[in-house]
Amino acid sequence: MSAIATTLRLIRDKLNEQFKAADPSYPDDWVILSNIINPDGSEAERTADKIVMTLAGIEQDTTVATWNRTVPSGSNQFGIVTPAVNVNLLVLFYANFYGKNYEMGLRLIAGTISFFQQNPWFNHASLVGLDPVIDKIAIELNNLDTTQTNYLVGMMGAKYLPTVLYKLRMIPFRADTITGFVPAAQGARGSAEAPLPLDGRDVPRPFPDRNVEANPLARKR
Image 1: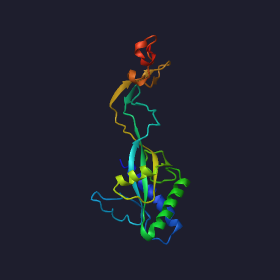
Image 2: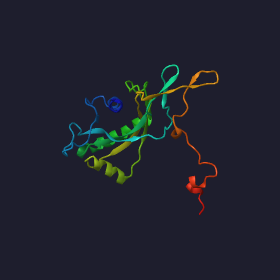
Image 3: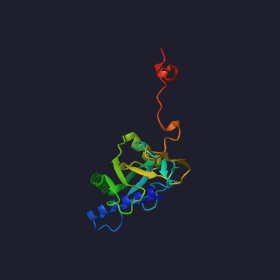
Image 4: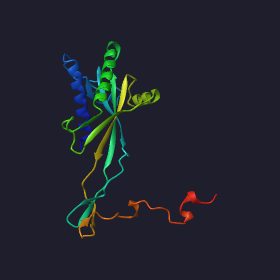
């Protein structure tokens, strides 16, 4: 599955389009999708005097907890599927400009912030080629204090230069592989309906009435 690579490449291209529109005389791309430093400590190829766009982290998005563990499979049964995993991408934009070109790096970091302020989300209409599994990508500025920024940049083996971190949410990972089947429940008119929960773990159960020992918070002090 190439959803992560495709999403980052498409956003990089969009950002480059904005910079080229502002300065058509520059023949190359200002933004490059790359690591900043190679494992041997050398600077990654073609990253000098560029905005380096690099994946700084992946985290699970837990804000969407609703999912259906069954899908229709025939007229009187449902297939069991594993839930999707939704992930957020932490993407670092690193202005790799120094010396006499340092000021250009500041301008491009400011342009990057302006770009995402104007484009806080993308869908299939605004980001052509977006992976079909993704409905929408929301983009949020992720605040870091000085210590956190230095730690993040240092973890990548680089020295601090103007940097901004964004969170891209969210990319779903899901498979349609059916791991088992359950019979459909029959409605009042005999029509097949989604099955009841597969086991007791699917529904919250209150503590048994009057059972003090089952609820530690209810024990006498």
